Image (cartoon, rainbow, N blue to C red; front, side, top):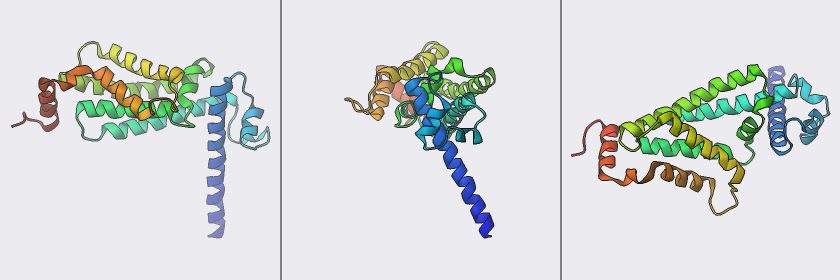
Length: 219
């Protein structure tokens, strides 16, 4: 029994070391760039010897792949859990916006910046896997926008609208500072209101939303 306990502790320790390497590498890739960051840099950032990362990863590119795939998988799971809840179309949109902005600007969460800035450094295999995850994530946004359109809140090309929304929010990596006038949560709320526009305030839109949420017109 004691041997099993020690084995489990070793597995947890190895998992923790791997996570430390992923997080440190993501920060360094974001700050210095993939090409300028060495394995020695990554190992030194977590107090390991220069050869220790190879106990967990085959190469620096393998680390990069782990950063973007594991990060995107985590966001996708959070988004899928979010949209599984019963809520109105505008509330679903605001919740997705809050999640996306939080992922972009949460302290220590560097994977989206790395994914956007180091896309060309990804191997074709990793890039294909990442595209599959991104397509699933964007499909959740498309469904959210479709619900808004059916409720009368928005109109137009949903694919274009999705690209504009996500592109604009991803660009906030360039200019948003959490220590500034707005918090990340306030940025998400303001952005959601901006994209939804005044249509949410019209009586017709509110009636349509209640009809879609409860299945029948309000009394």
